[in-house]
Image 1 (cartoon, one colour):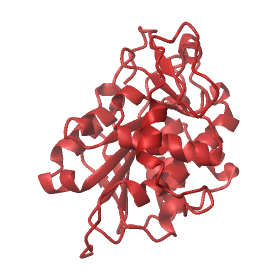
Image 2 (cartoon, rainbow, N blue to C red):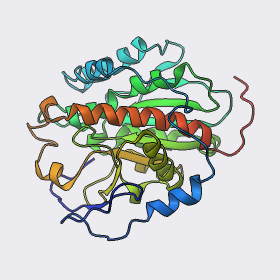
Image 3 (cartoon, helix red, strand yellow):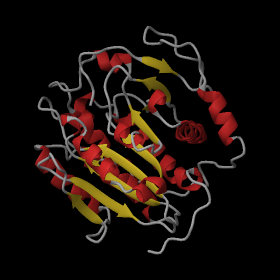
Length: 310
């Protein structure tokens, strides 16, 4: 939930990309992500070719993005239908009633061969002004496309794709989901990937509020794809759904597209939050990165796993 009255950013460019950022938004001169990547992932022999996933065409991603119209109730119904259209059947698609909200969380379950879990989430609700495309239909509408990217490949992890309700009211849906998790479910969850406010620029990561291993994996796979990713910390801008999982000690990472320039444009929570504000080339590139990333996490996110009884 972004605090629209604040305009202080800390930005860093992960080493492995040309130079460190040197503009007025920079509050730290260090570029430390390089060391994390080298130490954690120098032993991995992974390329974009052997991470197994099947991204959907750009036309499908943009078609889903274009279905933003309506109030929050209509958006919840649209997201559920998009999951169904993507192949998430009634047995694995559900609505979770949320205490304190009139609308449920939308959940699509994709079972793996083990008891380990990766959660991928984004809130579908919107602020009153504008169309709420950037914040956050841009994230919610990618969930079915990410489901499609990994559903046909063998996998160890069970993926749980969640459209959260009422983030704009204080992260109500994500808080409810995280707090109702049992201790066993928390221990089994290796990662929570949160998407909020995409497509204003290329992919950015909230590095200071991301697990170092998940952060290193993102930078690693971005280099394999030759896709830019920048660490832009938004600690003083607001919170996000990922923080509810951090409180349960679940590793989390938040992907966004906020920079000082896009923040100063005053798009979020205003009448400017329309599809015309999106940079669609960057948006599809971000989808490609996320599709590869969530597939890559299945390979590296956990210790040796045990057989799943399902």
